[in-house]
Length: 94
Ligand SMILES: [Zn+2]
Image (cartoon, rainbow, N blue to C red; front, side, top):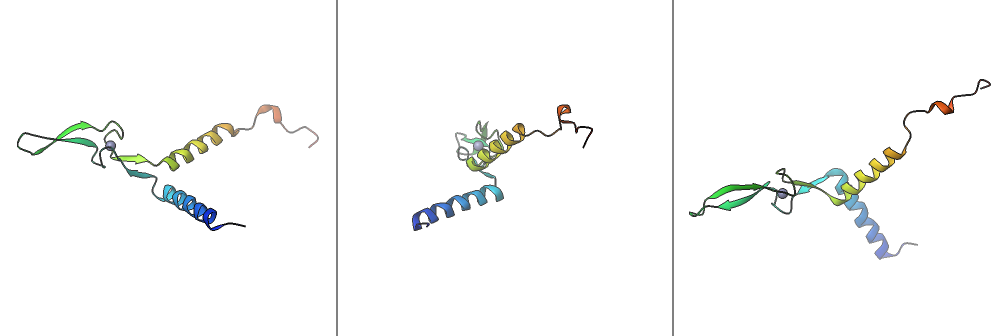
């Protein structure tokens, strides 16, 4: 029987999984989605700075849950045989 806390935990995990499915990308936390670091001139007007090293100028980052999903899917794909091997030919009596 599920207790209220475990049901709440399962609901939170399911919600995060749905969020990772619907919106796999989130705003970069380093540059706040701007893609580069904003510098200011001496008269306080903004000028473009260096490209953000974390998001490479895209302003988006892949969520941790989606990165975990992609890794698991890639691991499954690499471990699954896609082409039939020649050793498993059907015997002549079948
Ligand atoms: Zn960034």
